Image (tube, rainbow, N blue to C red; front, side, top):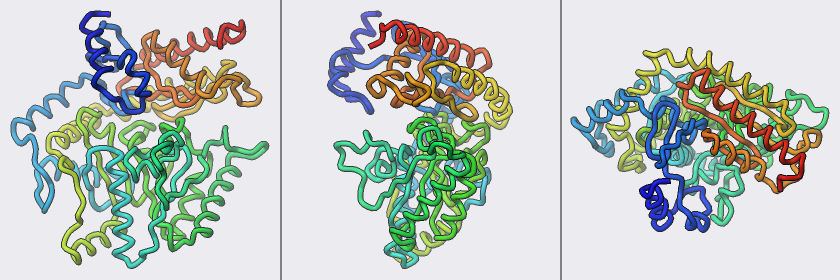
Length: 460
C-alpha cells in the first residue's frame, strides 16, 4: 500500500467517526480508502479494483462515472447552484422534477415534497401523517405500524420505524407509538407445513389483530418496503400484499411504500410497488433518484394525504417544516438527468434482461451446503448462510459466516454486504452479464473455500 494511502488511513482513524462502524476498532487502522470509480468498479488508494456488487449503499444505479450527471451538475452550478424552497420560493429544476415524479408514479399522486435523504423523507412523512390527523380532528390517530427487520432510516423517528434491534440498542429507541409486526420472511418465520399463502394470511391476521387491540382510531399509517433491504433482502411471500391492503383500507390507515431501495428499477420495474401490485398513499424516494451523486429524496402523496394538510396549513398560516437544502437545484438537475438517461437508454429493458441471468446465478448457489436460502427479485438478491441446511441454523457465532464470506470476497475484488448471516447483492443497474458472472464466480469460490475449511476443522 502506498505511503499516501497509509497516511489517509491514519488520518481517518484519528479524525473520523464512521456510521455503522465499531468506533473503537476503527481507531486501530482507519477506514478502507476508496479513491475513484469507473462504471460498476471502484478502486482503492493502492489501485486495487473492486466490482461494487451493492452499488455503494444499494444506490449508484448508473455506476460511478456517468459523465452526463457530472455535466448536469456543472451546468446547474453555473446557473443557480443553490436556492431554498421556503415561503413559496421555487426554481425550475425542482418544479420539473416534481412534475416528472408525480406523473410517473404507479398510482395517482398529487404532490412531491423534497428532502435530502431517505431518513429525512420518512421522518417528514411521519410528521405529515400526524399533522393530517390533527387537521381531521383525529387527534388520537398517531400510532404507526412497521415490520421487524424493516429499515426506514436513522433519525429519531425513522429509526423508530426501523425494526432492526442494533439500530435501537443504546439509543433509547423506538419511541412510543411505533409498533412492529412479524417480518414477511417465509423461510425464517413460516411454520412447519404452512404454505406461503397461509403464512401471508397469518401475518395479515396478526396485523389486523394488532389494529383492533390498539384501537383502529389510534392507527395512522403502515410503513413498508416492497422488498426489505437491510433486513436481509426479504421478498414478500405469495398473497401478502394482496391480503394486506384491503385491511389497511378498511380501517382508514395510510399505506406508505418506502421505495428508497426499490425505486428506479431495482426490482425489475420502475418501482417496487409495480412489481408487487402495491397501491400506496405515499411513496418515499431517494438513493437511485440521483444515482447517489448528490443528496436528494422525495415524498410523493395522494390527495387523500395532501388536502387535509393543505387545509391545516391555510388555517394556521404555514406547513412549518422543511430543510435548507430540500429540493436543492443542483441535486434536482442531476435527478432529472438520471430520469432522462433511464428513458433514453431504455434501461428498464436492460434490467429485465440482465436480472434473469443475475437471479439464475444467485439461485444456483443455493446448492451449496452453506446456503440455506437464495432469494431475490430483479437486481437485488441475497444468500442466507447456515452450517446445517436441515435445521436452518449455524453452529457458529451469529453473523460469523457472512462476515467471513464478505472478507474473502472483498479480497477477490468483489464488494458485497454482510447483514447478520446474509450476504446481499445489489449491483449498479448498468451491470453486464459478464460482470454478473464476475460476482457469482467469486462467490462460488468463496463458498467452496468455506465448505472445505469447515469440513476440515480449519474454520473457527
